[in-house]
Amino acid sequence: MKVKVVKKVLDANDRIAEENRKLFDQHKIFVINLMSSPGAGKTSLVEQTIKAIKNKYKIAVIEGDIQDTYDADRIAKLKIPVVQINTGGACHIDGNMIREALPSFDLNKIDLLIVENVGNLVCPAEFKIGENIKVMLLSTPEGADKPAKYPLMFQESAALLINKMDLISYVDFDLKKARHDSLSLNKKLKIFEVSCKTAAGLEAWIAWLTQRIDEFKK
Amino acid sequence: MKVKVVKKVLDANDRIAEENRKLFDQHKIFVINLMSSPGAGKTSLVEQTIKAIKNKYKIAVIEGDIQDTYDADRIAKLKIPVVQINTGGACHIDGNMIREALPSFDLNKIDLLIVENVGNLVCPAEFKIGENIKVMLLSTPEGADKPAKYPLMFQESAALLINKMDLISYVDFDLKKARHDSLSLNKKLKIFEVSCKTAAGLEAWIAWLTQRIDEFKK
Image (cartoon, rainbow over all chains, first blue to last red; front, side, top):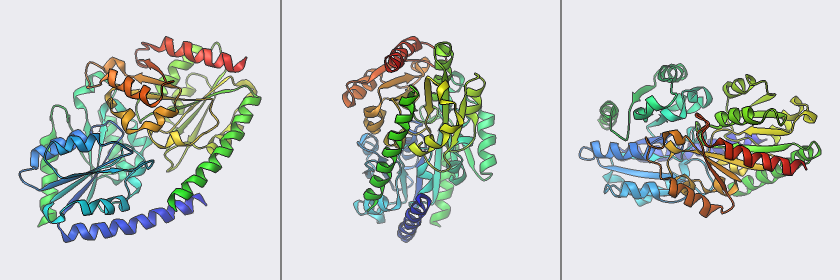
């Protein structure tokens, strides 16, 4: 019974996500669905990415949180259009939440839409929102056992940013194991070792992302 | 519609949790529902707690993970009865999963049952399992904005362990804000500052927990 209900919800969500996707294609908007555990550094990555490429692309951001507007306030300081989705109890963003947020934007003035999902390694990976790519962060203090424990997100993502590399000498993080287990789940996964705090390693991420956006917009 | 379905699921879960509770009461088993983000240190806390009080109480553990048996393997090394629940896609443990795990234990030989929930700051707080208390960890690398963003877990917990205090000088964690915002949500919340890695600060947690168990078993 429970499985059936869940399947129905996911099927309905997929249809809405496809409609969102059509709308994004019409407007040539490249969409990133950004996911991670709470506190892994999603908002810091969004800030760093905006700073690096805001002169090249028109960027907009959707922030997903159970409640509050902390992250949206951080992004608004960068003079970027941002909408906060408060999911209430829901532990993920779904296609319908995105659909309802879109009228707040001028879609003709967006090249790149970054959707920062609710901090959660499980459910966000199950719900499509109309994205081009899913991108995830894993921070070194979380430990290298996460690919084995939360495989779906690693399987669904196009890129994995191993964040908080500045802390690696203070925590027990087996980088080799994290890389190996992630690639075992998804051999196409592009992995970047970064620190969103110091900006170390972000050039490679920016170069890869820029190439993806440019190919899409051709 | 969605809200109705969710409410039905939660109501059904509450009934099963109550049945679990009756069974635990009959056997005088004190039950902890342990929750946090992925990688905040739940298993390390379970290990440290076992080491500290295994001579005083008969302890058993239920490990909840989407998949794999990493954490159960760690606990089994301490010669403690342990059952792994693999939730499949589910991002939390519910009352029925606990009910189905219980026949694996001899309930007459347990004083303290620790249930390590799936790493997730959202949904585990919504599903009762028949616990005496909910306990949560927040690790310093996650940041002090978590009470504001994930209020329910802070509201539902009897104790909050602020973990990875050994990293506090390397991360931007506003301890005062974390304490203040947590207590604003739940003024009865008992807060411990600990490092499960170095064992610093754990005596206070152990003393508090021991007192709770002894009062229950009186």
